[in-house]
Length: 109
Image (spheres, helix red, strand yellow):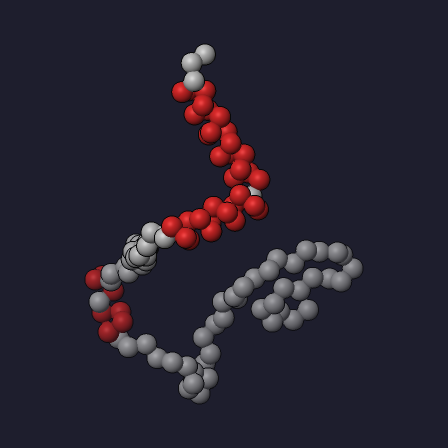
């Protein structure tokens, strides 16, 4: 078998082949092989001792939106209460419960 730098396993045995992300390669002796490779400036190595690690700024929540709350008119309040009385049985139950407790507190026992 000729060794070409790859793993070679006889086919007669079932084998698990480890996954290798990168295999080191010998530098090419061909001077034209590196013609298209990007070059790194020598300045990149000169200031390596003074490197600063940049961290993302702390996540801050944007300020809450300012809402102007206008009070309901008497008509709007009446409409809202009428809607809840007609359509929300839980609302009616809570109003009744509060009414009943109020009576118990005010009436002598």
